[in-house]
Length: 256
Ligand SMILES: NC(=O)c1ccc[n+]([C@@H]2O[C@H](COP(=O)([O-])OP(=O)(O)OC[C@H]3O[C@@H](n4cnc5c(N)ncnc54)[C@H](O)[C@@H]3O)[C@@H](O)[C@H]2O)c1
Image (cartoon, rainbow, N blue to C red; front, side, top):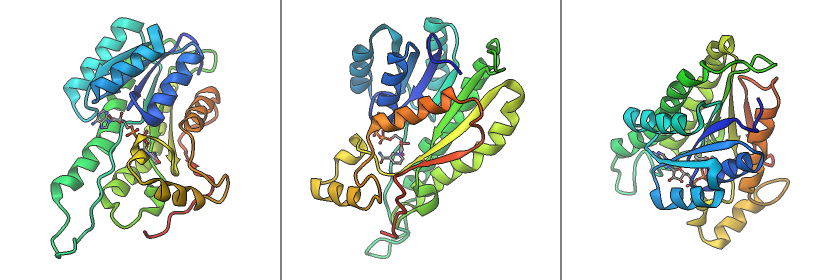
């Protein structure tokens, strides 16, 4: 799939991994529809990226808001060739807290609603537009790239909702790729290790450094630009489909 003059909807595009991805796509001559719940960050990123970017405030788990964002993107750019799903939240809670009280069900649901259902919601609405594209010389009409996490495989204590949501994204990758194959739409999922984004910025420096040291090589946190590079490599390579790629410097997370 080409990037130049092609349009990619990037959820979580206001910040972190999504922000870096949108920047790289625009640097390569693509257009980015930034779908994010954060209007301040979204407008800031849109202004930095210029005419090739459009910010649309939307919650990925809302049918109505994502439909509206897609309509705005279609009006501005005329087509959507890719959906890159980076919006996400990290609910943290144990099955039983210190007092023996059970995990809040609303918090569990929230992780599933944003990370898993939000990813599915964006993908189902975006492919309805992608199938209208004229296939390129490789027969491609579009691409979906999801963001899971190494927590899908090595979920830690306190990450039950998060790991379940990311495991769900891993699970839907192959059936989605199989179904979309006849439309020339590839579906890939990335499972990042630990990346230096605003999501991590809340941690004290010592904790960030310790996390970086747990990565076998390179022994540091990943850079958002390295995630963006991988997304672009997936877009470029038509043989990548129906697969989950860990991008993690060989880290395997411990229980806590
Ligand atoms: N940073 C890491 O170490 C890491 C590791 C593994 C996986 N991930 C995943 O990568 C993705 C991006 O994370 P990040 O580190 O860039 O975080 P981030 O907090 O910097 O960015 C996430 C963005 O998603 C937006 N967002 C949150 N809820 C939303 C919703 N309901 N609708 C639309 N937008 C919403 C936020 O406003 C924010 O701009 C997430 O799915 C996260 O789970 C991150």
